[in-house]
Length: 183
Image 1 (cartoon, rainbow, N blue to C red):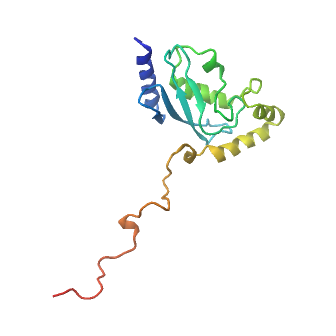
Image 2 (image 1 turned 60 degrees about the vertical axis):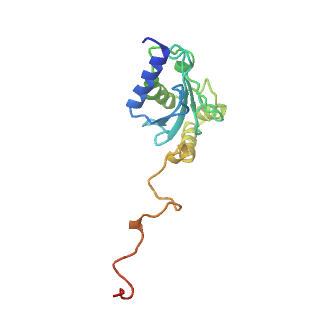
Image 3 (image 1 turned 30 degrees about the vertical axis):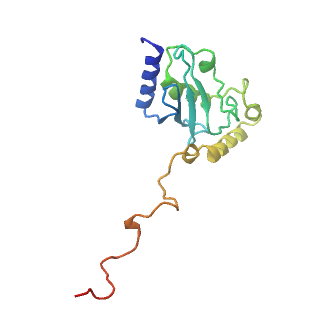
């Protein structure tokens, strides 16, 4: 790589090509949102989160800043700010890693294998250690309440009541004319 900005551009393109929905925050390539789905075989399955990514000027030599925008119940995610406590992102980051690694490996691993001994959410960590099944129920409740497509601004296919009706939606028949036409 010739420069961090080229690498940033390539990593972002690679992430977009990997079928992740990416939404740029501003004109630069340093801040954006990524749509992230909870991993299968986890209580997070079915949840969808908007994850904010901020790339520092020194990326890839310095790790990206990652945070959940909508709420998630997890020992290693701050419930208020969405900040993520993940060693591989915060301490052991290497330029060998890229953004696809973050979304295909690091975040799924974080959700599959929480670390309650290094919590950002003490309540979630305590519940997980005390009663794993109650913890998983709470995770699923949060997914239902805060991690649906509409919670991240996704438009569902259903028509809302304030949408205009198309001509086909009206039950009118223009062929039936009342009265006789003028001669």
